[in-house]
Length: 102
Image 1 (tube, rainbow, N blue to C red):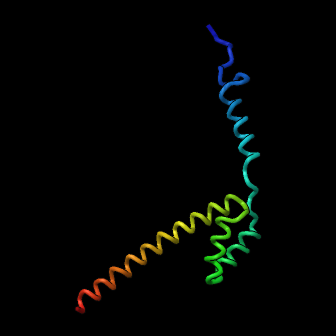
Image 2 (image 1 turned 135 degrees about the vertical axis):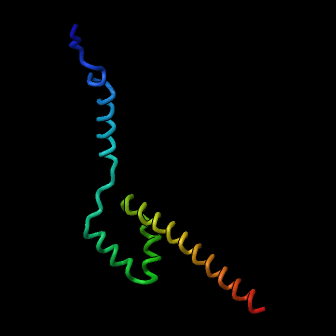
Image 3 (image 1 turned 90 degrees about the vertical axis):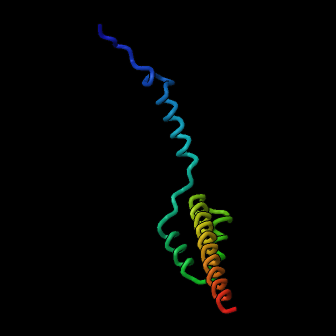
């Protein structure tokens, strides 16, 4: 008793067909890849003090490649977390220093 029917997943309109349509739509919606030359220029800008902070906001919230925007938004979040951590340490150190001197 052999069953020569094609499984439903391989028939036209099955789950795989829907997956391929979704993958094609996704590939049309993706942003272009940021070339190496643009990343090198971006890294060069990030080396310059003070300018790097301003440019992080420009890259994060300005017009441009969504991947680059997401990267700089994440970088700003990490910078805020690290700044808060440093401020906490400074407040604790100064609090301890002033508490022991008076």
